[in-house]
Amino acid sequence: MSSTSDIDKLIELMAKLPGLGPRSARRAVLHMIRKRALLLAPLAESMRIVAETARECLNCGNVGTTDVCDICTSEKRANGEICVVEDVADLWAMERSGVFKGRYHVLGGTLSALDSVGPEDLRIPRLRDRVETEHITEIILALNATVDGQTTAHYIADQLEGRVRLTSLAQGVPIGGELDYLDDGTISAAMRARKNI
Amino acid sequence: MSSTSDIDKLIELMAKLPGLGPRSARRAVLHMIRKRALLLAPLAESMRIVAETARECLNCGNVGTTDVCDICTSEKRANGEICVVEDVADLWAMERSGVFKGRYHVLGGTLSALDSVGPEDLRIPRLRDRVETEHITEIILALNATVDGQTTAHYIADQLEGRVRLTSLAQGVPIGGELDYLDDGTISAAMRARKNI
Ligand SMILES: [Zn+2]
Ligand SMILES: [Zn+2]
Image 1 (cartoon, chains in turn orange, red):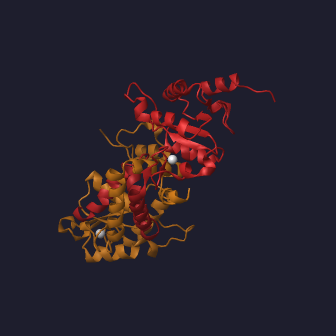
Image 2 (tube, each protein chain N blue to C red; image 1 turned 45 degrees about the horizontal axis):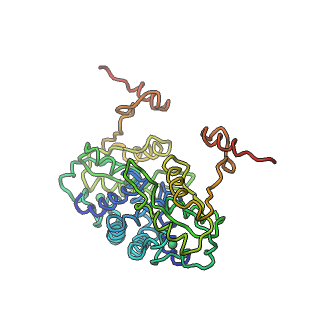
Image 3 (tube, each protein chain N blue to C red; image 1 turned 90 degrees about the vertical axis):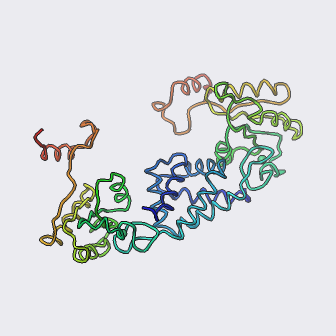
């Protein structure tokens, strides 16, 4: 199938996306070819633009299309609070909730002795600088409730202790969560943090 | 996030692909941005090329980059056999197996009274023509083992009866298949078609 090699190449590239294997890549490519004008051509153009313009914010590590992201340049977001997250996906999740009005700091991972990820690999020095230059009063450590996430949170807390208020997200039963489906750790944490009603 | 609207638009388009929802589209876009040179830019270019060149074969309905596909133009594939499939994905699956040496006919779906899909919508008239013009001796109906697939197979068999040998794929236990995981219909079919060893 020599002249279909362009299609084969597209399938191969699509299969490299997270969550897609060869089979779902083939299905996606067939779907795109059927919707050439409505989906394939617009996707090609959208990807070209993003490939040219997307960059990491030099201040916080958020992804945007400018050297310093919209959140870091917005004076409205300068409320003295920084929410520290592992990943841009976590920042996006926080933004969708609409609950946080301050700025972010994206670590880009967690400390890991096993993978030799140290503080310098995670924008932790930059976070220390920001506490001074942006007059930060509170750092909210919104790291994942994993061993590595919590190790990283403790390391950052140690580094910043005494210079700023340090908080973390409450742990407990998710809204709509059924106890039967929760892991034991979550149930224990929720029980220990129980409140009067 | 006004200047990130290009990224938002890409996420929105990616979420329209089969098997991807908003969450996996966001993950895919972040992954592509991180691998901009290795993945995002090549994907944009590959999609642009396929959007410009991909077309359905006028003879069989296969997807390729020429008006008549490689299989239909190859004299080696003119062995008098046509394998009828519902979808290009099925044609690709047959080609990967390497077991079939003839040509294909892609119906583009199944007959369905409910969705008012008739024979004209499915390239069935074209299949009748091909039996004559391509000197076809055998039609292999490789349709899915669903109610609609089998209804369509029976309709085509009725139309072509007496003009050509009509066969269908054997039904049975898949290689490596565990009985415990198979549905009752497959087990019944395999039992009825049992062979001496
Ligand atoms: Zn920023
Ligand atoms: Zn063809």
